[in-house]
Image (cartoon, rainbow, N blue to C red):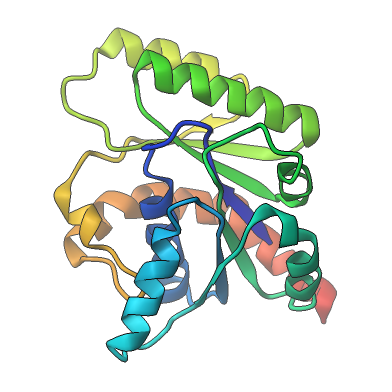
Length: 217
């Protein structure tokens, strides 16, 4: 199964969200996970290498990769039907290398914020994604949300994004999210992320994961 975590807008929290989801899937749900870090900063790959230096246990693999090599990597990963591949995308849309990545996605998770620029970028990302992969499932996660978001703005944005996919509960802007690394998530974070990830796992990941395992057998 291939899950993309992406948005055109930088600073949406894609990399942290990818880490949180990887830790949730491996530690809470005992899934086999590989992360493809395609973001320009490659912060996940850097944290992974740091964790190895400190000799921490590796619950999953992290591969730093660019869009050009994705078709080859995809063939290798497809050989393992039990693998869940999380892809932290670069924050851009003007690269044809995104096309095979979009086409291979079983699920797209799109973090966003309730501001005009983030909303416009999210809609553009969704339109381009849908033009390449019309049937892909999209889940929007309001991320790094501050307490002063206007209720009217939230309702309007949720209504517009619901035309493309499903909008989850919001994840707040909390400093302990930044302490997440490639071998653990702070315990204080779990009560916040679990309702969002449990719903995604139950509705999208578990049925597909189970079906592929049966087909592989």
